[in-house]
Length: 636
Image (cartoon, rainbow, N blue to C red; front, side, top):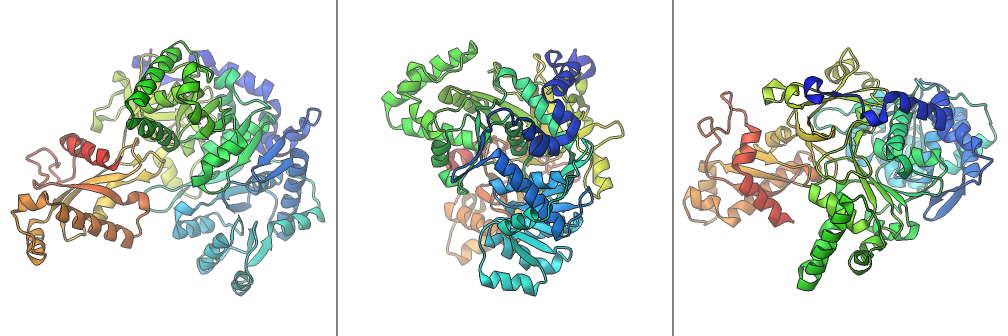
């Protein structure tokens, strides 16, 4: 079927007609009124006949009626300050996950305003660019540090008029805001202002923008992904439909720790609010996440591969020093893997008591469902964690431009190594990429997505929009996929030499190579990273003349080949590359964690350069595979 057309419009089990019927029936209010009315206002009010579940913070509990009143107050307060109701208004959100984040988001939807999340890893110049491009006049932030960051950029963000801060700030900071002619107001004061100046809502239509979500990208300025209320509702409803009986319910509790600036977390939280569940916000320190999990005891958690990799590594490490522990672990994994093959997922086996009890408790002891996104997860790790946690773990693939997941593994499919079939709201096809020898008739090609989840374009950037969104509405993801015989998708490559690390950060290796090549030590460099690893390594071919001169200056003897094997030389080169990276403003995840110093140049003759002297990355990856594996082993 797929080899003929290389096109899948969602699996036949989840046809589009069924999906639309589901959305119109179960979530009719959502489909009709848009995300703001559904999630923030109408839908929650519509549930008033049922017991109102608390929206949970680890240090605070707020009932929905109270939260809805706060939403109205913040919304009316923003308008009283001068923000105009409607789609012309963009509000910046610059906080960690907290109740106030959600209240501000829903307050914007109350008057059809658009939220624009900001986050630290974007960097100050990117934040300034976003605020200027989106004409942001008001930013809501959480801490004094964020206020100071915004004030430092005030001269570059002339449209910024107001900062609303959740926590207390010093008199010195208040004075700086006054000098910059920027109004600084406490979040509680904004609530009080709105309470005294009530206005009737202006709810959005489904086609209205809900958010502009900026992607950090790898080069140049970030791109503002425009998503409508329909985009968001379509995606989360299709995911809930695919989860079936495992979809969130009113008694579920979710831990919020992935950044709300990312759409996977946003969609998961909206789904919980839609059905009257509860959300707990982590304390703000990722090192304390384990304690937060134990305190909240969530039943559902969206997550990223990095967390699951840590669980895997911690258990393996704990058992490594004892033959008996290793033997018990292997027996437990074998037994539970056999149960997985028979679709048995449980936490009450003898192995759960003997081997995996501490793993269960570290996640609160009640976890039943995890949704994994952001980057691929190694097959051995996802199988291990499914056994260890005794929870259903589904893995999705998507990007901000198609809202969140466009494919998702089925509960009950415990074969690792793929990201599932398309969700019901999406059509997915593969397109030929001749330059990379991927062809759709071989079930391989660039992944393209179409449907109500696909974004409206990049804010004020038609050129970049046209590069990824074709005239027929297909989003060209830049990822290379392969259809498996069971109709599931496997992501196998990138069309451009851009990839994600396991924590979800994008890497442009050629950009980094252009920085590191400035080192006097370096003649050539090949930067390598993998979606299953959290850091970068590199192969460095030193400049022979400079290296020999440097060695003499530092009283290190040896031939060029011998120097390339010298650990002092290796450390000196790595230190210089780290210095260069920091001076050039690279982020910590863009710095190299290890290098292999190689004595032979990359050349056309040895097949590692093109005739135009560009690095042949796949060939280099194969050629240096053993050295790459050695570096990652040493870093483990």
